[in-house]
Length: 322
Ligand SMILES: Nc1ncnc2c1ncn2[C@@H]1O[C@H](COP(=O)(O)OP(=O)(O)OP(=O)(O)O)[C@@H](O)[C@H]1O
Image 1 (cartoon, rainbow, N blue to C red):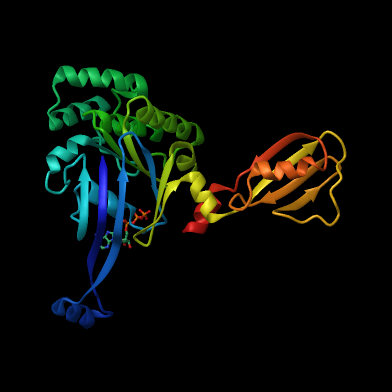
Image 2 (cartoon, rainbow, N blue to C red):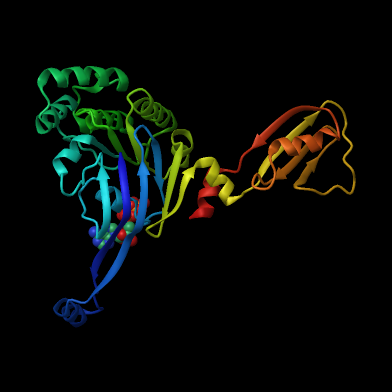
């Protein structure tokens, strides 16, 4: 569905000197430096996947997305969307793509929402009956009715995001590129948008590539995460795999039915970080020992009545990989 091989992009940035004469001299000499924004990235996203594409500011996310959508031409490497190069077959590729930028609306600010849909439908050459049918479906999913006649500038941020999601789906694309779709939303609106995104992927079968700085978005939505840093792919795999790779400890709080007896000299593949008569708190690294093996050992010290596990905070995991 999305195939990226050896993708790179560098920008030529003019070297501008200090002071008026230096600036004029730089301008005349045409001195440049090269900025490598994306450096030899390869990945494949299969149909129906929900993939997070994350990285710190300036890592190269937007530059990648711009190459995937055909806005930017790669310096080297290749992109294929459903078998087509977005640069050479822009028209065919645009039909397969829906794009949402959380920071920027694709709707017309002063027009009622439905007028924006009319314009977009005309731009995509969608027939009236088809448009009405799709809008009815989207209206139900995204609860558009309450604001469809309202000018976009009067919508709340959550409503605007729902309106933008509908706009990106109007031409029934196979793939959605979502750039910060929950930015600035309150917890309730975030929850609702995440639910909608899940439905778009799960019920409507859309392949989703999500760029976000919100790690809860990633944890709650993505089976797979790709991490880009300094233009290079630093990780591509599951969230659990990423946790394991970084190797932060898991905390296990174990309660016992009666007072426990821990051998005083005990040392092993996990660390005891807290102990009361009926409770033990241990820290283990899932790279070196499985939770079941920890429990098997602890069972010898008393009858376990409850176990509470705390995985390492995902924000912290990401912080480490950045
Ligand atoms: N048109 C351009 N000309 C010169 N440099 C650019 C251009 N676009 C991006 N860059 C540089 O390329 C690098 C990657 O930028 P990009 O916008 O892709 O990062 P990003 O991961 O999307 O960051 P953010 O999370 O802040 O949006 C940055 O150093 C940026 O300054």
